[in-house]
Image 1 (cartoon, chains in turn purple, cyan):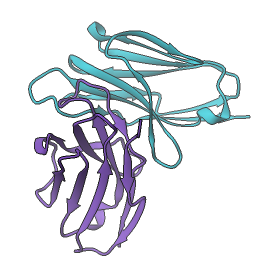
Image 2 (cartoon, rainbow over the protein chains, first blue to last red):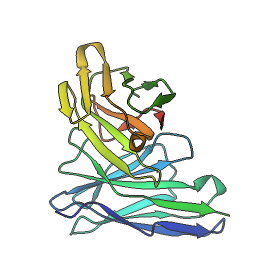
Image 3 (cartoon, rainbow over the protein chains, first blue to last red):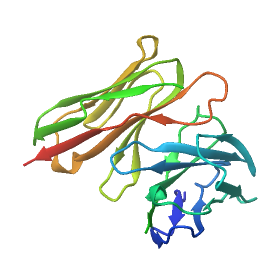
Amino acid sequence: ETGVTQSPTHLIKTRGQQVTLRCSSQSGHNTVSWYQQALGQGPQFIFQYYREEENGRGNFPPRFSGLQFPNYSSELNVNALELDDSALYLCASSLDFGGNTEAFFGQGTRLTVV
Amino acid sequence: GIQVEQSPPDLILQEGANSTLRCNFSDSVNNLQWFHQNPWGQLINLFYIPSGTKQNGRLSATTVATERYSLLYISSSQTTDSGVYFCAVAYSGAGSYQLTFGKGTKLSVIP
């Protein structure tokens, strides 16, 4: 059984640029959620995708967008990067939508905006 | 939204000691998970425990959903237990898509 994998592991971008982060869900999982973790804080929910549709969204601006593909892998896109977007971005996959099934996380992508 | 409070925020233990970490939440939940975040940032699943008691080796957890708290017990701590422990919940109300995390307990186990 393949776990959740994310790429890249580290990334440095300049303010104003755009970035795409990628996530492969665990085998058999149809739901992917994205979280942002600032230094010293707990992860914050960005959005969730279920069967290629956005299924819920946290308190993040529209410049945070995503996609889910037919194989249930997912992308997180961030436009017009700001310094405060520097964080660890975590992807989680689960068997079903909503919050009531066990979530499994990838190793994260550490984004630095300079 | 639901509030999640973890205590203590920091904990320093001598190797071999036992500890209890607490998670309080403000509303009914249909999911509660405990995670250990390693130094590289990955969240390792410890327990999926919306109610009841589970044990896995030196670790055990209890969730009392009616009283809105969960406890994580670590016995005979080892230096490899060091890291940040997070409790995360999904509340059972409408729009319950996400896990809401506490701020974590940072555990340091010294030899």
